[in-house]
Amino acid sequence: MLHPLKITSTLADETRFSIYQYMLQEKESFSVQNIADHFSIHPNVARLHLTKLTEIEVITSEYEKTGKGGRPGRIYKAISNGLSLSFPQRNYEEMLQWVLEIIVELGDDAAVVGQTICYKKGVEQIQTILSTRKKDKNQISFDERIEIITEAAALIGYVPVIHDKPEGKTIDFAVYNCPYHSQIEKHASVVCDLHESFLKGQFEYLFNVKDFVQVDSMVKSCKNCTYHIDI
Image (cartoon, rainbow, N blue to C red; front, side, top):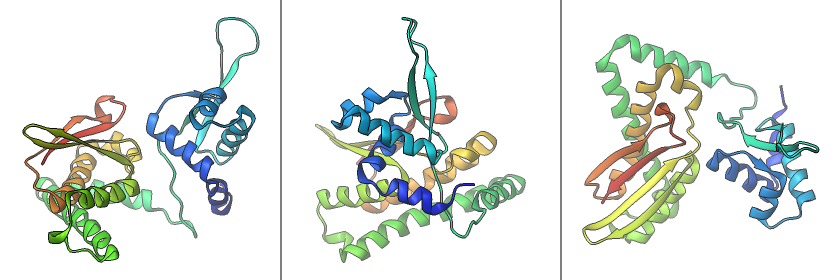
């Protein structure tokens, strides 16, 4: 098992971390030249960053045949489960699995309680950010609210995009790095309902939400889980 220090020191480089985030978000395979072009760096530098990320096992590397003859090119892709660290090691993944199995065994009442708690946790996260910024929710502008939800988004792995329409504003966002990806296959319904409740808590505390709709889902083989919110 990799030592946490090796992982953190590898991701401490700002460009390398940005490359990793970009690959996680896009969920595509990239060549060295793709990364070099996107980040405006020399291919040799891009290759070094990709090699370092491969060494800590957050991206994969394999050869891709071009069909044109010659030496096959190497392509890289972020591992879908993302990365979690704990030191000393703590097995939160197994504990999460136990909790989900308990909810399934207890049935609908337990699921409702779980969603209520997750909604509350979403609200509490926004309250914590407001407290840190020493802001009053009732005295901040729309742009400040967007800054706060964007900060919360960065902690989870989604990107909110705001649109102005004649009938009002809408927010679209895609969860590109689901923190519960490893549990989706076995407990998809429960996990998605709990996570969505958490997200609703965040948005409904900050905005007058008229509609909160999931458009795409990774459970249905979509690239990301995407949401549309009317405010």
